[in-house]
Structure formats: C-alpha cells, structure tokens
Image 1: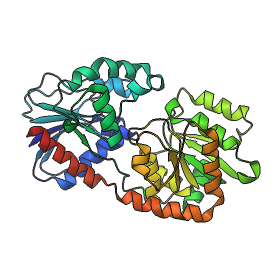
Image 2: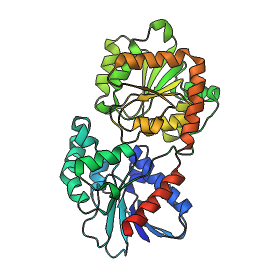
Image 3: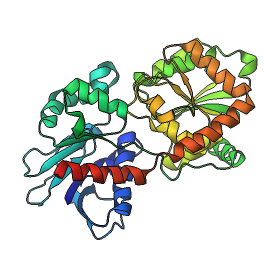
Image 4: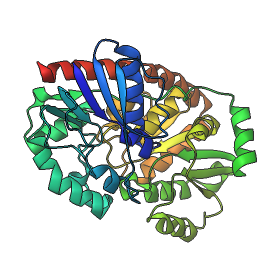
Amino acid sequence: MKIGIDGRAAKWYRGTGIGTYTHELISSLNEVDCYNDYLIFLPEGSSLNNLNENFKIESVKSNLKDNFWDEVRVPNILDNQNMELYHVPQNGVGLSQNINCFKAITLHDIIPLKMPETVSDKYLRIFNNELPKLLSDCEGIITVSEFSKQDIAHEFNFPEEKIYVTHLAAENIYKPMSKCKCKRIIKEKYSIEDDFILYVGGFSPRKNIIGLIEAFSIIPENNRKNVKLVITGKKGLSYPKYKKRAEDLNINNDVIFTDFIPLEDLPIFYNGAEVLVYPSFYEGFGLPPLEAMACGTPVIASNVTSLPEVCYDSALLINPHNVNDLSYAIEKVLNDSLLMLTMVKKGLMRSINFSWHNTAIKTVNAYNSMLS
C-alpha cells in the first residue's frame, strides 16, 4: 500500500489529544510497518525524524495563522503523489478533495454536534459546514472508542462496518516515578509545597472545572487541610469565571491554576499528585485518566460517554452532574490508603491494555480493509 498521512498536527497541535495521537501514530507505524510505503506531510522542526526508508517526509510550510484550525484547514498540496489512500487525523479538517485516491479521516468525537456551546465558533463553523461533505467522500473513518463509533454511526448514518476503532494509549514518558522526587521538583519549579488533587486538560466548559471547584469546596476543611486543587492547562476564555468561582467560595488560596505545563513535566505532576480528577461531561476518549493510571496515580472520572470504556473498574466513576458525588469520591480517596493502593494497582494493570503498538497495527488493518 501507498499511504499518505497529514502529519501537521504532530507539530502544530502537540500537547493536545489530536496532536499526541498524530505524533504517536506516525511514530508507531514506523516501528510496526516495514512493508508499506508512507508519505508524511510534516512542517519543518518536527521531532518525527529518523524514520525508516519506507517513510518519506514531504515538508509543508506554515501559513502563519494564530489558530490551529485556521492553519490546518488549508489542504496540503498533493498533486501527482501517487497515493492509494490519504489519511487526515484531525477530524478531517484540511482534507484535500481534488485527489485521485481513497480518503480516510480520524474522527475523534462529535462534540460540536453534541455540545456546540463548548467549542469555539470558528471550529463549530468548520465542523458543521465541512464535515458532512467530507464523510460522503471517505472510504472509511477511524475513531478512538466504541462509544465514538456508535455516536458517529448514529448521527451521520455512516455504515458501522466502515468505522474502525483504534484506542489511544499513554506515551512512554508516563510511568511510575519517585513521588518524593517529583514533589521536590514541583516545589522548586512551581512553588507548590502541599499535597494536591490534580486536574489535567483543557478549559472548555465541557470539562466541568466549575463542578470540580465546587466539589473541592464542600469537602470539610479538616479533611482537605494542607491539600490544594491544582488545575493545569492553558488559561482560556473561561479562566476568569473559574478564578472568580474559587474566590466566591473562599477557596482561592487553595486552588492553583498553573497555566500551560510543558509535556516533559506532566509525568512529574501525575506522579506527585494524590489523585487525578477528570469530571468531564463528554469525551471521545480521554487521555489524562489513562496517563495518570500509567503513572500509578489513582483516578476519579466521569461515568459517562467514553470514560467507563477507558477506565473500566480501575477508577472511581462518578456522575459529573452531581457535585456531592464528586466531592465524596475525592474525600474517600484522600482518606482511605487501602483504597488508594488498590486503585494504583488496578490502574497500572488497566493501562497495560492500551499501547500505541496496538493502535498502529489496528490502523494498518483499517487501511487494508479500506483498500480491499
């Protein structure tokens, strides 16, 4: 097979779920597939180098936009590339129409349809205006969970046999480390001295950060003494609202907004945390719980959408709409060392079931099915 892959997200959107997926998919395909030929469209400066001989890189230029979706929306120039299948990993955005080969996209979720109020106006317009046309031209869809597969099939009336599930995985950097050493680094670099509950992810309203702050606030003070709530992620438009909610609840001194955390420091935060809390209302997959479990950190996550599929019985699953339920779960983990140890063991075992090696193999199988 001769496969083309739009790899721009691996450089321009690194640190997000889509960027991580694109980077790890290409890297893992390079490890498992020495037979098929790949043409990878990559911006200069990508960390994806030293690829095998059957991987050719076609350099692409940046269009110098401020927004990833604006930049990636401009299709790559694919004339005369002699591909049999062209794969766009970023929800189909930027898929070239005027090429004489099969087309495939990875559609991670349909959040713009389910929760349009939680995505940017720009992305919502692109999704609503372009995706239906793209799907009619696709030989197949790759997605990241059985939940998303059913969502896509139902909403777009797309044949289930042409939707291929390839679960995501934690990168190799996520592994157990010395908790004492990690907490020392966090103290030196981020001035966080106390034990802490951790949130990792975006600032979209669907992530339910308001609910997390409210749940933290109703834990009795004697049970959260010397424990902070650490909320990582680039401070988006919703940040002032989250900050004000913490102030209104008189816990602003106990809620720490770190802003963006470099990728290399995320395993340190996971390992230094008492528990990761991920109370999202909607996820196509949800990488942070899996990354935390791979680090040996207990996880509390929502019991809706794809998260039970990812976490199974290795996390405490809560109703994200019930603040008291979430608060009780946090308090329970903090005060029950035996439960914490059990969750650590289950989480580590669960994380082993997911690997980018398997993701790559399932992707190659999907390519084969589409071309047959």
